[in-house]
Length: 372
Image (tube, rainbow, N blue to C red):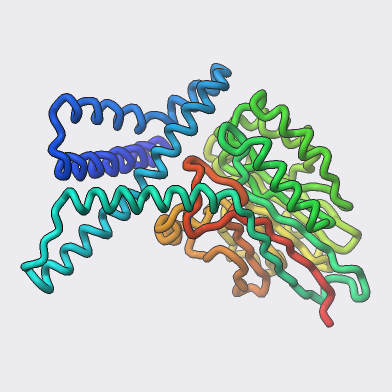
C-alpha cells in the first residue's frame, strides 16, 4: 500500500509540475514566483495526508477548509493536465500536417485555463445531480405470484468533510421517493471521523424500508477506522454483512463480504464465497454485496446478482479509461458467464475532488420479479 500511495503522490506532484512548467512558458514567471509556486505544489501534494492527520486530532474546521481547498485544487489540476496535454497533442498533429501553423504558449495556457474553469464548474454541478437508474431482473427463483422486490442501491457516498448533511438529505429524499423494500450500501459510506458524522446517523436512522437496510465495508471504512465506521452504521440502522447472509421476504437471500483491504491489514478474516453461497441456499435468489467489482470465477454455482461499487466510473474523465485497466468490467449491468448478473454502481457521492465529469452520481433501483 505504501508503494501504491508513493506512486500516486509522485504522479500528482508530476502533474502539478507540468502545469507549473506551462505557466512559466506562457507567463515568464520570476524566480520568487516560481519558488512560491513550488512551495504551494509541495503543500497541495501532501494536503490529503495533512487532512487525515488533522482528522485524527479532531480539528474539524481545519479539516473542512483543508479538504475543500486541497481536493478542489486536485480536481482542477487533473483537468488542466489532461486538457493541456490534449492541446499539446493537437498542436503536434497540426504542426505535422502544416509546419507553418504556430500556437503561442500564452494562447495555449489561457485556453487550457478557460476550458478547465468551465469543466470544473460543470463537474461541481454534475456531482450534485443524482440520476436514478432502474433495472428489472426476472428469475424463476423469485416466487411466482409474489410482489416484485424493490431494492435501492447506493455506493461510495463518502460522508465526511465534503459530503455532509445537505447531500445526504438529497440522497435520502430520492430514496424515499423510490419507496424501496430494501436499501443496500455497497461500501465506502463514510470517509470521515466518527464525531464528524454523528449528526448524519440520525438522518439514515429515520429512513426505514420495509425489509431493512444492509451494508458492507469498503476500503475507506478501514481508512477511517473500522470500529468508528461500524459504530456509525449501527447508529444509522444498517445490518452489516461481514461474511454473513440474511433472508428477505422469505424468498431472497442477501450476503456480503468485507473489503479485501481488511485482510491485508490483518483486521478481518478472508471470507470463503463458496461457503457463503451455500449459506444462501440454492432455492432462493441469492445476492452478493461486494465493494470491489471482482467476481469469483471459481464458483460453479455463483450468486444470481452481485452488487459492487468502488470504481466511481473514474469520477473525472478520462480516469474512467484508466480504471478499466484494474477493473475491466464496465459500470452498469453485466451478464456473467456463470449465468448471474453483476451490477457496478458509479457511486452516489464523491471522493476527493467534489467534482464528477462524465460519471454522474447514481442511486439504482433494482426490481426483482418472477419469470413470466
